[in-house]
Image 1 (cartoon, rainbow, N blue to C red):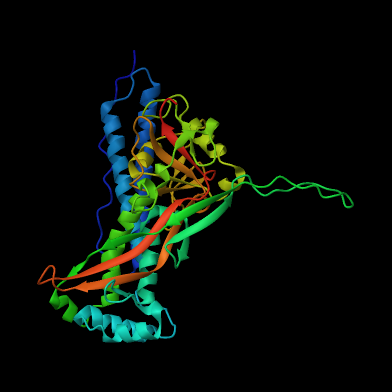
Image 2: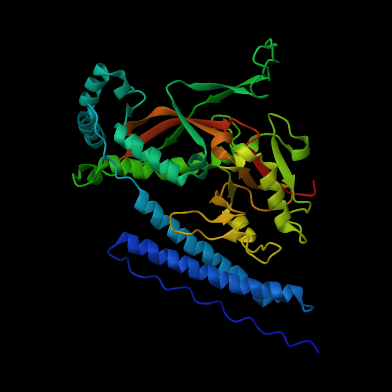
Length: 425
């Protein structure tokens, strides 16, 4: 007689939120401990679910619900930890920069933002064109503010953090790429040097597009001398910029925005050619194969050439990561592993996992997982300068700050990134 099914116990209670300690480092450490405890509880619950699946009784819906709830708790603890780590890494606007004219530009910019006084910025613009772009297009923010915004964009935008970033002064970056590799050959010391086959070059173009945000301020805020105006502007625009960039770098169509990595033609890896992104099909519509789920991940890893695997990582949404977290290899080990420290990323098959909510969720024929050397595969192009145009008229009594930057992006090496497509073929 089969043993009676045991009702799944309630999910272990997650540690209660604690008041913010004096030391931020201590707060990060406590959040990391909470995350690890949540993951241990998840493993215990999922092991019980897997044992039920292997038994004749099948999966208990209560156990499955318990696993899902603890899985969500792991995600929530991970979000808390990431926010704390990001806060600790956030640069202070205006700190640690020293160059000629910096303080003068900062003071002139503050007078413009607070009261609309353009005199100082106009004078600086006359001295050096790099300081300002003129009143019609706004004035450039101080370099330290631009640096602070760029640093936070790197932290907040997943693809930007992984990709190669180039700064340009023109509207378009044109980059030649050797599709067939360099032309080489072997010869003896005294042998004639025969002519080698000419290499095949492709010219890739990365135009920069305008990205804007329009934070609003009250007169009271602008009159308050205790408010750091540079820091306020960077804090207001960085999240908006990062959100728009993150979406464009994944799904952008290249029309007035960067071209995202999923906008390129996707082909089965067996039919891959330059100009296309290769994918590995799971063989199951909208899911990983039940009999060999980890095999698809392993196939994807070794689809990438050895030179690219050295710096490879995974890119997927949080929901996809939650599904992958349940998988075990043939030896019964979880293939998803938590980070060793609070500052590190979790790993999958030994490669770091990065989250992008712009990656598609698991669905039929969806390319829900990307794997590769994104630094070699994707290029982000930044045109130098972030400009601000003060507008006290359009939304009275508020003052609007039309803030713009120019950015582009696209794939620069089609062999460096592979996808997992959740489809039969």
